[in-house]
Length: 342
Ligand code: TRP
Image (cartoon, rainbow, N blue to C red; front, side):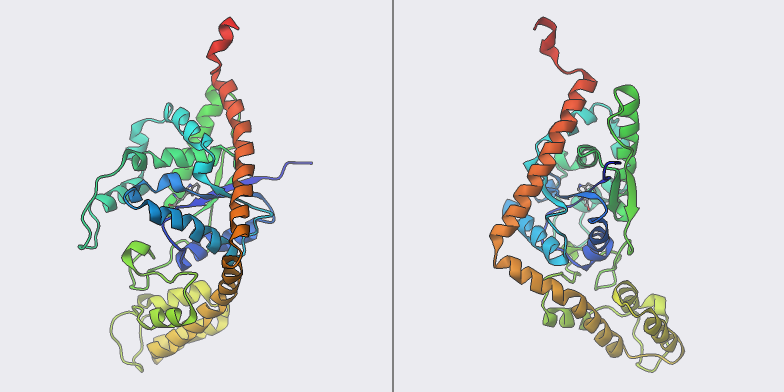
């Protein structure tokens, strides 16, 4: 019997998850959890940009776990892993850092953009901060995250592709120079690579305050959709450009009725459709998607012992495979220095 292939992917614990996480990641993971041995990581080593707010990180670990359960990830089949609960991540990061030139980090476009955003945030209200060393090396740790369970597949959003490329290059190099331990991991993109923010900006993100959260109640969803940016000002009976109205990109992402959506687009382009009609439809679609999640979330919120168990058991499973890998790594690098005079 061929072994079940493994998946490793992760999310940074910075707060409750939003529709961007769902469309870009969770929805994809839901389909993969029955076919693969999945390790879903809550990457708390990766949030050094929130070093000034550890209580937020602590809360976010639970929020993420609850959102995962609410979305329907199944802790019996998939392992929910707290990154720092597997300190082998830190050890492997250190060894791998031996073999990665700093130029690889300096040229990483995602890292550069994120470091710029920390140093010079674009909302004028927050002051720039300095970038922690741990943040600079997080792509190395992400490589360690992926290689530690010897993952075959890494479902991610487009912005994470440079990190997966780094993991592939690192696996190849290690396998060639030492011992062939690591599968060369492949990236798998979600159905919706990037969801616009409700303000129309390029990305849904908590720091911009333009999210719809998975745990938002029906009224909050209605309110946020009503306030959504819907393209340049336009009378209700004035034809509009579909591409200029982000409400359509949300309908594309979440409305299952593709025929009606394409009808709506045609009417919009020819005769105009009121933004109120579009937004009412979107509100209904989103609330239909989110309602079962709210119910599952409420159940788990009433039974936090089960949430804790999911995290403990998953982290334990990850630790077991991590130990296995580290034994192989020690052997490959021949790190048993004391053996000489044993
Ligand atoms: N850096 C990823 C993000 O910001 C989260 C992450 C951490 C991750 N470790 C990972 C993604 C390992 C894929 C694989 O979304």
